[in-house]
Amino acid sequence: MMEFLPNGFTLEVPAGAFPLSTDSMVLSHFVRLTKNARVLDLGSGCGTLGLLLCAQNETCAVTGLEIDEKAHLAALSNIQRNTLASRMESICADLRSVSERFSPGSFDVCVSNPPYFSGGPASKHTPLARREDLCGPRELMAAAAHAVKYGGDFFLVHRPERLAELISAGSEFALELKRLRLVRHRQDGPVSLILLQFRKGAKPGLHWEELSLRFSDGSPTPAYREIYHI
Image (tube, rainbow, N blue to C red; front, top):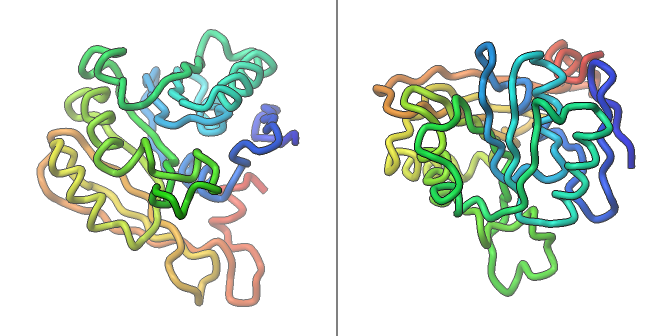
C-alpha cells in the first residue's frame, strides 16, 4: 500500500507491516524539533515517523531502530525512494542494544510509537510490532535515557491506562514528564491516546493539553485538519 505524506513524500507499507495510523500522525504533530536535531526512532517500522518528521522539518536527521527485518527493508526502500539517504537511516536491531550501538547522549530527541499489548501466550497471534515482548515501558525508557542528551526529549504515544506505569518507568531513568496531551477521537468520547514528552534531567513541572480529532457530529476539528494537512 502506498501512502502520500506532506510535501510530496510517500510511504510504502508492505502487507503485514504496521500501517500508517492515527498514532503516528498525532505523534509527529506533537514532536518539537530544534534546527539540525538528531533523532532516534525506537521501533521505527517502515520509517513512518522518520518520513513524517523529515517532511515537516528540513534539517533534522533520523536514525530508525527496527527489529523486524521485513519492516527494516521497507524503511530502506522508503528512504531511497524519497531521496533521504543523507538525512535518514534504518538499522535492523533490538532497541535493547542501544547502549552497545551508541555513545550516551548521541541524540537530541528520541521518538517512539511502541507496542501497546502485553506479550505472553495469549498474544502469540498479534504481530510483533504490536506486542511488548521486547519493548515494554522500562526497556523504552532505558533506551531513550541512554541515547538522548542531558536536557533532550523523548516523545511517545501510548494508551491512557498505561500513564502511571510510563511516568514511573521514566522516573527510574531520570526522564521527567514535562508535557502530556490527551487525545479523543470524538469530542464527546473517552481519551483514546496519550502523547508524552519526557525530558532527561528536568525538574518536576507538567504542561497539560487536550485535543479532539472530530466534533460530536463526526466532522473533523481544526486540529484534525492541521494534523492531516487538509
